[in-house]
Length: 210
Image (cartoon, rainbow, N blue to C red; front, side, top):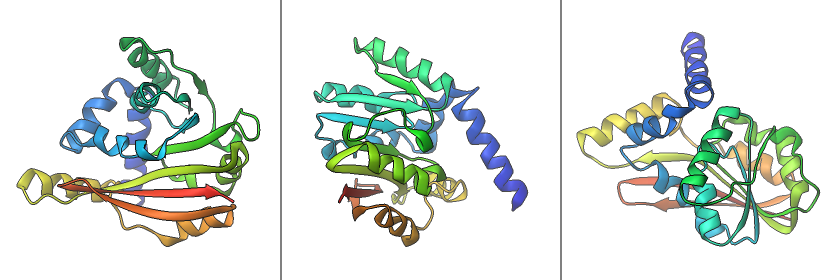
């Protein structure tokens, strides 16, 4: 199990750093084309006007937020993802406002954002230091939206294979209540919102700053 966990971490590191250019293809393939619709399920909670995305990846949600009229910013540790997000923004004539940094030490002033969003983040998102930083940069009654998991619920053979792959890689595991308990302890009022998207389902955590 330790070897498998190490291999899995190595795979995600390569996918997010040296092989970032393959990220969209891999995400599309393993989700059978659903990945972006899952990410976009956070949009109804992003009312702006100022929104920060943690782990912006290829920048597709950044483009959607700007198209919605939000003043959006993104932060990511990966320089490869930063370059990819800038290119994707330029393709649609948008100017990306991105910063390379760590969620444990957000380089923004207190009360800078009305929403902070993270889609399919790794374990860092539930670290007490991350939650403290998110709480700090949110304005009064600001909202923290996390999309941690998705489940493929279709019954076709490709759906069942994809669902198995998601379980193996930890992207569709069982939800642990201790995660929301940690968010609540950081000063948030927490709600869970499960959305049925037809042949798949996503879990959204919606946490309002107290």
